Amino acid sequence: MDLRVILRCVTTLVAVVLSPGSVASAQGKATTLRVAAEVNDTGVVKYMMPRFTLKHGVRVTIVAEGEAAAAQLGPEGDTPVFSRNGVTFGLTVENVDDPHMATFAKWLTGEVGQRTVLSFKQDGEAVFELPIAAETIEDSVELDGDAKRGADLALQACGRCHVVGEVNRMAGIGSTPSFAVLRSMEDWMERFTAFYALNPHPAFTVIPDVTMPFDDTRPSPISPLTLTLEELENIVAYTATVAPADLGAPIAHQ
Image 1 (cartoon, rainbow, N blue to C red):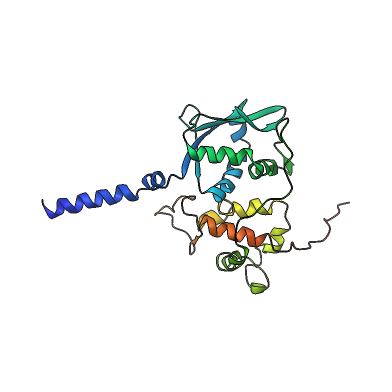
Image 2 (image 1 turned 120 degrees about the vertical axis):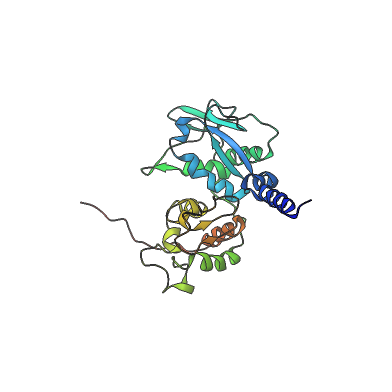
């Protein structure tokens, strides 16, 4: 066989093996979900998915109505998950053989998933509430990350913009909140677990198997930051140990 033909065959094979779809399929880290418009329009799906992906490393693709999916999230679903304005929304698993949808279903109906949905707010007001007869969620959330490793990672990955602690107290960018200030916010955990989806981070952050690769025509404007889900979980565990900043009493308006 001609050498050029052999090289073309090898090149084609490598391209197929390394294509994003093939990688996702080989790793088995993807599933699909249809979401009713009245749920999707609130923004809660975009809010909760990064936290699920952080915990389990599974990418959930939201597909349009009419398209095949592993499950449907909408009114009167098989398994109630949350309510709004008297309407209960539930999850109906259509592909019971999809283990990654089973993982998502367990997360969404469990303590962490329910807490995530309930913490979602619009204009400072909670959007959803527990479905009727749902059990009360416990106050504590267990973090699996290594806080000691997280401290080093936070300095390396976040220290160029944020004051992480005394170790870089005189560094960081003045207009960027410190870890202590962020820790004082009620939604600090959501901010950290989904930071790569919050501006300006998407412009320079890469989380393998979670974020999309940068467009070759629009590369990152600064040196990219790359973190694995495990490393991010370590940073979250470290942040939980940071003492919240005392920002004083809220400003009283006359």
